Length: 419
Image 1 (tube, rainbow, N blue to C red):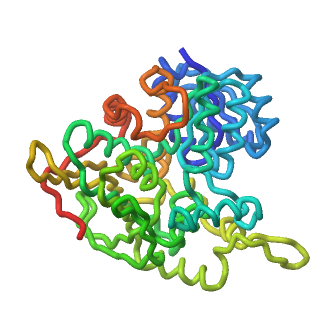
Image 2 (tube, one colour):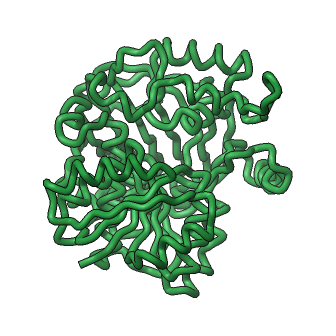
């Protein structure tokens, strides 16, 4: 029925590809491409005996638009699934436009070099005008909206869990559960234990940038920014237990604020253990989270990239990780003139994920929604020319697909609220 090109072969991409192969009636042909072709070859060889999907592989540098165009034209896909790094979103979008192919990714664009003068000028202007200083935002990709509309192509942004499923939860709440929504609290709890003193559950460079940035939330349509990790709450998560969580800036706040302008407050919280925070603060204090190159023994190195090379590969955490994740959204508002609270969430087991696809639950909870988003595009349920985030489409078929492919929803009609 369809040909799909997946760019990336890390932990999240591996899960998405496993899941695509479980739906071979839709994903009839799939090409796995990354900078390291041997990784693609190994995954294809592992999956080939288990699926009817025809698997091929390719080598590509996703920073190089010409290479991407050559690959896309040579393969002729119906969809490009970008499951590489957020640094490469714009080059892959450019290549898709040049080749007339639909596009999707799991995280919004941010630059690899945050000292680039041209990017810095745009960034500093945005900080002043919008009021938040995180390096990542949607403006760079939203700028492609007219180009994709004119080309008759769809670009789906941020179709992981958060962002992604959390936005679908919001769309579902607005469609079925509330007449008006006053507040949204997005809670991301990882109750897993991998046994290392310090490791990140996804790309260390991206993860540490995100966590060390100032926190921010949206209040009455405006950004409120606070120092990193300065707002802490404790919450009792279903099947996980009581955990400390901290307010962070997160990309879906920006798109939800745009698409649900009547919501008075939108916040995002993520759980962290004390050991993680102690390590991160120490590394930040000594400059290891810096993106500015330094000279060492006659060579230019970027501290955070060097740190990434020292830390465990997130894709290697699967066999070590035990416990569960719990990610969802708590809403307050009204229905039929009465006050209402409502909580929709998913609980995912690290060990069950490893038994099924060889990954830990962080990769699983991002890779499964990526496959389900691709399913929506390929079956015509979400096709609309332009650039969109998940909450702008009908949530019902997407959530049904998540239920089917490993991330079933749970609901609490009387949740404890976050003060």
